[in-house]
Length: 160
Image (cartoon, rainbow, N blue to C red; front, side):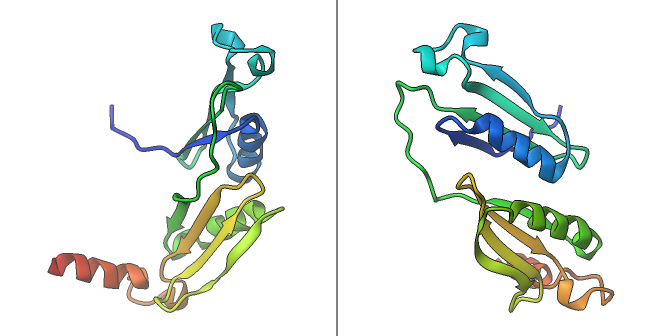
């Protein structure tokens, strides 16, 4: 088995709604286990809350989420973002994700060509999750195949 790193999003009580929304954006069918499924609810409010939810998509994305039990404190975080990125060949798919995620979102940066040559945008979706979308080589699609700013990043990394 290959080691994977997957975003795991925490919510107060919106995990089911959020993963269902993300399924409408990325495809796939979310699965859910509740606290009551495992006898882990700390109170009546927890019975139907999601202890673990997971969305796997045909594109290979795995997104996990859970609700916070009523007896635990939850602080909305802003020190992370979920990043979707690809090259010019992924332009249509990435723009499609952007459009769907934009529904009810706050747009931080419109998805447009950035100074480094890629199309880039940032938004906070209606569940408070921050997303970044980067389409490499959008400004020079069909050029030398370099992914805009990714080429410069690769050169800088090679010099370290």
